[in-house]
Image 1 (cartoon, helix red, strand yellow):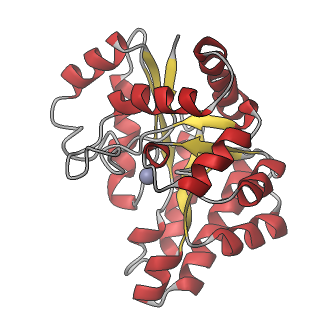
Image 2 (tube, rainbow, N blue to C red; image 1 turned 90 degrees about the horizontal axis):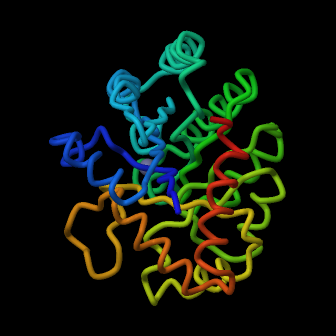
Image 3 (spheres, rainbow, N blue to C red; image 1 turned 30 degrees about the horizontal axis):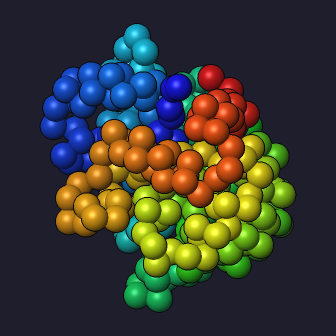
Length: 261
Ligand SMILES: [Zn+2]
């Protein structure tokens, strides 16, 4: 069985401290692909450089985007810079992201309109360059779905860190997205999400860790690691009726259907 971590911030501390040791462990654990979204202009170059760390049996797949937590002080000029970077590096990029809308931050920073504008522009870039999207959500399904329905990106993508109801997940699936299943399902209290994950067709799910963020249940306070993709997989297997082999095989196909590498 081979695994892909479809969302991991390898350029963040502490994951960037000893990448060689980490990648050796990943290969041992049969993790053969790691998708690395970017969060702000400050880390675009780092994320692009990480691609060079790819080795036999482990491919690092970079994406470029602007995360809704990092909009403070950014003007539209940054979106032009993003477009130029995508144009220049398009053959190496597998998606646009991480982008999205965060309802909690929108409240705290009173910046919903700016978040909507930045998300919409990144959806348009995804359309222009025929790239899938990596979408961040938190208390923002309605706002995201509204823009996706208006702009209709054709290349789908990953809804990162899926949590929500079956119906909410289904809306993204119907627009060509796969749902990123991560540490959330290791928490007993995430009952609605766990119930939904049982019901979705297997060809709509992908695994992710969001490392070093989103620690698994029982590991709060510790940095998350892409190695935990195995624990997320085991938890998913407990929720599903298919065999682990069938689940692992289908999850890989699901990634292939979006990223084409
Ligand atoms: Zn992320």
